[in-house]
Image 1: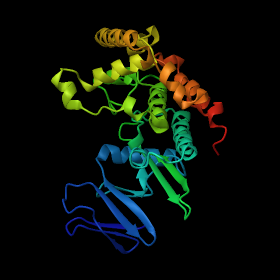
Image 2: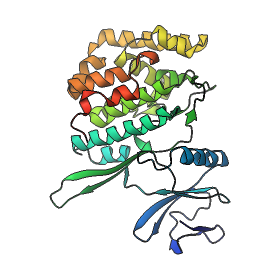
Image 3: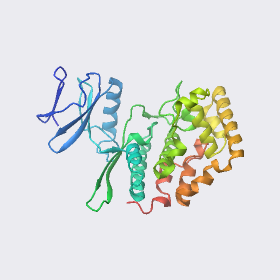
Image 4: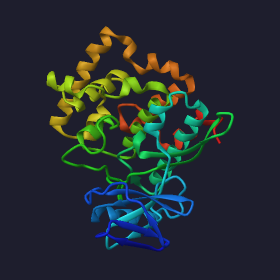
Length: 319
């Protein structure tokens, strides 16, 4: 695909056709464009992310599960991506009656995307519904069918060349979907992606109210950070802090913080035993509950691998 970018005029051309910018603000970095019968997203990115994207494109050439750019403009730092109709987040929010079998198909494709990454020692680190892109169609009878699913947004993806965990001085990724170790920024591994994927499964299967924070101002009024609230919720749902998690984090300050959040969760569970996933997860069905329980264990070393997840009987009816 040949491309020409004319920044001063604000016009973008692909294969000789003029494409419309979504916004006239020159600082706005994402554009939608058409070329013939195809739609694309043009994204102006930082140089480090541009270089990372080129590395991913080379390593995962031809992937049908990862959102890899199809063209680029090095001088302008612009990546060209196929356009997708929805994110998984917006799809579920707008269509709460979207067919269950099609939801499972989406989740299966996300799992396959993670399998591709993990097989080559990449960690996504930011697995969440708004990083899943979906194309789907509705026929004249109202039947909805998913046609394409990809996992995207590799801004903070990391390749562990030697298998060591990623350590950062701060948490990375989205607070709602992070693993417990991800909230600390320490000991992030493939298992951290699995925990996040387990949360995405819960969200897609109807558990949004238990996962999403809806009133940040109310938390702030009581001096509670989003990270603290999420940690307490996750310890309430999936069990108390474990020695395996503390070893993974390997920081006295963070271990004390995790123990404190776990103690708060145990008080809440004593008053409301139904907070445990072993109670409310039954609504998802026994196979789904069993699989997600294996993905959301507090000890990262005890979580299922992506190969084990995809081999679970819950997927049997999905192509």
